[in-house]
Image (cartoon, rainbow, N blue to C red; front, side, top):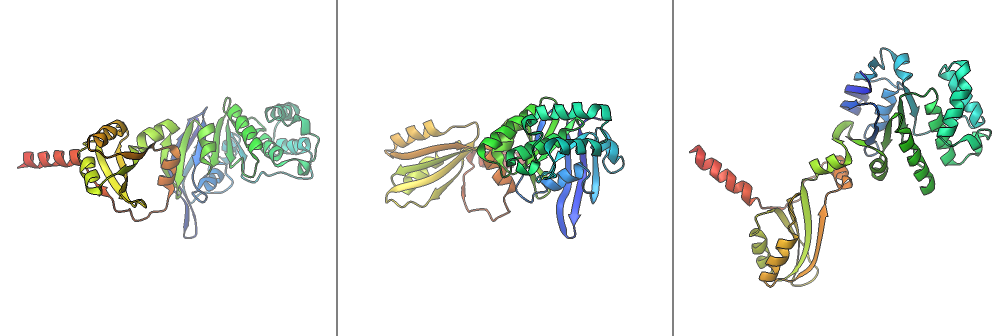
Length: 338
């Protein structure tokens, strides 16, 4: 079986659970994103996949090879860039890559061809004879990616590859990752949402060592957004505004907010994602002589979903819940049961 299969993966450190029953299936030929806050278990999972550390329980198979039972065969299929690149600062770039080819047991006749290829891919040919310690942070990251590419493994794993880079360097590394995705399966771990959104085709959201959600960005938004949010400031009496809002069938939840201005009612309204209430509210406010002072419409984004899935559990705020359609259906069901 090709790709990576992770089943019921567990990693504990004493009483601390870093990875908790994680199940993932990664097919070949995509750029995957591991998205989660710091401490979510992303780096631990990466280290287990690559064989750097063991697991407390579960299995990890790479192209069918168990990383714990057949580590040599599994590791040959993976190139890895840790968050801190494993660079020898007093070597030149070329010397370091020769050293990596020896570690990876690349046949002697293929070494220089392989090195030339990864230098070109990472655009580091111009610095191949410079000492690594004299390179910029961006070039050091490129050299780190180059060492991961030695041997041309099918799977490239990059853990927080743009941390500490300036904006220009970040753009360059992201473009390099996209290029790698054309011929390799790439796994990118990051807590930076914009990076995952821009580079990755498929996203795993990790929280507290578990899989919180997965899918393309479009799928995640469509499946989990679930609602539209409308914020309003209406000039008028609060009771009149409340009566008006409750006359709208498509409102399933609303709440009032404090207003610093007298005779101005502030509120938030929620409706199904496929319902846009702006036009209805405009006309009903006009009919009831209630001027709209401000109206803002918002659909949930991937950022909203990420925050919601990874936030600490907290007591929910008290809200007025208005579910006319559902309550009516429940009444009909109760009658039919009599």
